[in-house]
Picture 1 (cartoon, rainbow, N blue to C red):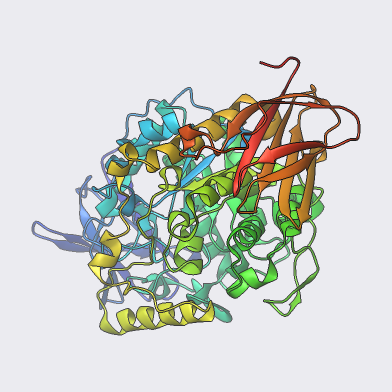
Picture 2 (picture 1 turned 120 degrees about the vertical axis):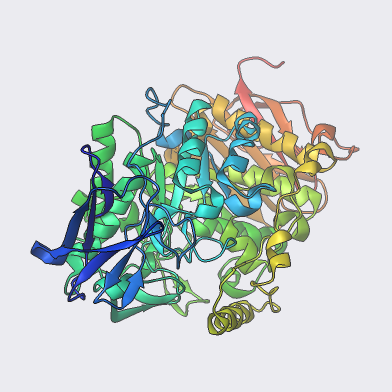
Length: 615
């Protein structure tokens, strides 16, 4: 569908429009002209135009009165209300022909928002920071949604043209260059896609066909029609969109937003169908490519294969680890944090995955979830910060603003002790202090007021004060990363810790194998401490000793045995630590069942690596 430039120089315009009695394409600019389209099988209108080359702007005209952009527009250079533009299917000179992707277990994500990541707020701005991310050690950048949204500042979840990369970010060519340059540096690219709703402004799909249904509701507006009349075409529209990013833009990973708001009672769920098609296309292309879900269901079927009646996602975001960590570390009890607070919750998130696996949730007032204990660790993406949690759970405050310097290091230790796939949120690696709030740039007064009201209600439901005005440009500007902080302490010291933690994970298979069966986790609630030993099947081991108490603590460490050397100490001066009268042991010798007492700094952590001899 959409505008396709053919080999003979003509352009074919095709659109599914069962609601239209008649349809035409109107060429914008020059002398302008309107060409009638022919209705074909399946209510698909099309026409060939001889002189509508690359760069031609156009609208569709529905029933002679409604002038609308193309639902399958590849480029909206004048925004969501402007004309669509004819672009080549693949004009880009790719240099990643040898790129085959990165194994799932080796993924270390770095989530970023293009508009606030750099001063430029563009794809090209991200390209300029790729070397930083490469030197940091992450292996995949994850972009918040880039489908065309209204205005030039938005989180991206208000996108209304799923096939058109945001014009203010750099459009299709800008995104292709970002992906190509990422692959050149050995970095995979993940993209957040939104198939549960479309934004309210510039959303013209309903003028063409039955894209939406009133059978279900979502927090953001009408649900997409995946199982009602005319749903075959709607399913195709979104399924092909997933393949479009993989094929035309060489995207490696798609993260599906809030799949719990994708409703489908069909015998074969849209998500199951789309995951299978995505994996099939990736195999045909000879690439490792993955699909990851955001889901608050704690339903293990999300990450199980279709033959086990699962949806077939390769992994999903693991909210329980974040909630358990923040509740235990900071004493958070507002909103969903009320369900957490014990060190045992952190231990369960590490050893099993879902903390809520069918037990009753106080916050939800019902039983919640199923067990993920038998699933490999890399089926979950773990994090201590992400865009949602910073903006919605902490009033826009990052960890560096709500936790002590020592607690930040402890949180980082927990993240890399987890058997899952670690994810950082932009700026986390250097202790960014700028806020990350919700922001928009709508043009309709009633909508602006509705968004403001909705944000206030959401914050109050979490027991938080009213948030900054999302429409104020200053709200957006305040969220820009402060890159000058990289050369300042303590930010430079936080960066040292993250680089060393990532290097340790990449250098030891025990930390990247996702093997829960080779992990031993022990803990205490009084005093509060946690130890994690991760092993590989060759006898290697890495041990984490973590102290949640503010004062130094002698933590009992148990292991099958061996010699261990100290690799990382969060109290080290290199990481901004303070000198202690009780320094950590440089080496440990663990023999038999007797625990070895390890002196751990207050709100700190130690990492020991198993070795044959002490260094």
